[in-house]
Length: 138
Figure 1 (cartoon, helix red, strand yellow):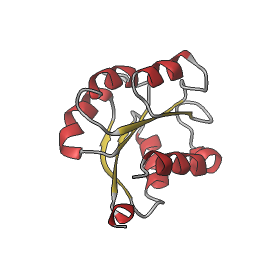
Figure 2 (cartoon, rainbow, N blue to C red; figure 1 turned 45 degrees about the horizontal axis):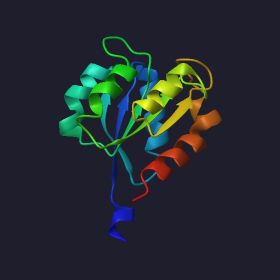
Figure 3 (cartoon, rainbow, N blue to C red; figure 1 turned 45 degrees about the vertical axis):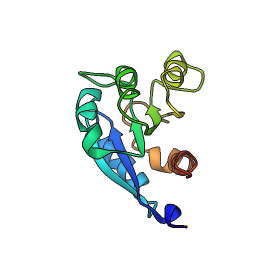
């Protein structure tokens, strides 16, 4: 019973401050989900991994310094956190989506309106929450 009530730790890896805000709102709409770290690129995310100790990483693919696929290549050696890719370049069946899955992403979801999808909550918010709940089921 206690494990169901345990707070699940989420890390956001997204270069757009605006999108991090939108995603954080979706994540924290679920009582037991808490954003514990935010990173603007994969390199910063790798640096934060040990301290943040996330249960789930929500990952964009297109970012400066270190993109999401390179982050995945490095992160698998450092964390057991589930990874949900949320990216405009990861539409179902795309090469990026397939590569992300190959590198260990547990779920891949495309943003509905490009890199900065301000309509994410309205168009896919419920779906994002359902995927998070499914991935974090203990």
